[in-house]
Image: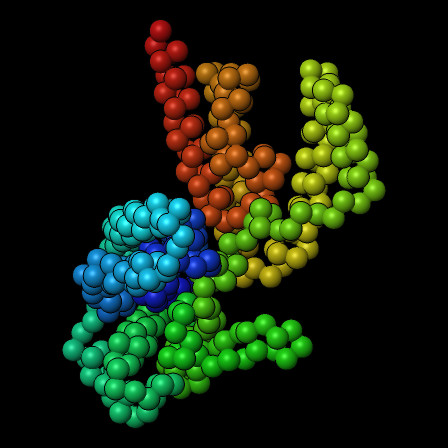
Length: 367
């Protein structure tokens, strides 16, 4: 089974939206993959303590840091004729601060609700884990020997305790934390110069095979779909199709039969290239377990679609017209290439859509 640990600093980054790599849509994907049992999210209780402490200090911290920006603006001498602009900037900073605080609090509630749900494996912070963490620090079995890494050692011991008891010999852990100095060692390849990290040897022996990530976006590479692929290079066939389509637009020929046909041709060509790229460059790199889940989900979606279309209440005009919104706006021919999180969402949507049409069929039968 694939397990994931997400450190408190990643959740804080989701709440703050201060830097890319931990956007809110990625949290939504993480939640969907967890609820769909593609991964098992394991959260030591101490992470929840850290998030709670962060929220207690939030107002003061944000006001303090926004205050530094306001102080710098206040100290800036400006031409008297644009003094009003300076006042506007200061007012905008106050508004941005208040919006940041409100957004942070909303996001915190959403995250905490999820982390306290039954879908997440929470690891209680016990006296035994506390003692084991202190012992680890004393033994020098943490990468950074400081007096303030009790929490990091407690995270390691919480995860070690969990995996020692779970009995999963095939467990793989995805470990995500910005604090690479506390948990990891750099393994950057000289030829690419891309910074990469691996779990530190002092910690590695206590955990199952582990992959280390600094951003949620990197961890969720396992969730890639065709949507994440770059736009295919316009070869001769695509270039011809684009040229024909642009000619129709230049002639304002939007009402002709050729216009939608030309648009469909372009979409078909791009989708064919994207599906090929996905099959060749993404799918083979996914863990076998996730490939199996993808296939089961795709087959279930197809059965649900067939069952929907068998309903007496299914209208080939109106029902088919509404279908894209139930498919998360993924073209039907591209469903098998979309992300796993999308597949899970589409499954749930179609289960609801089928129930609606079955209820409509029952009403028709009674009338």
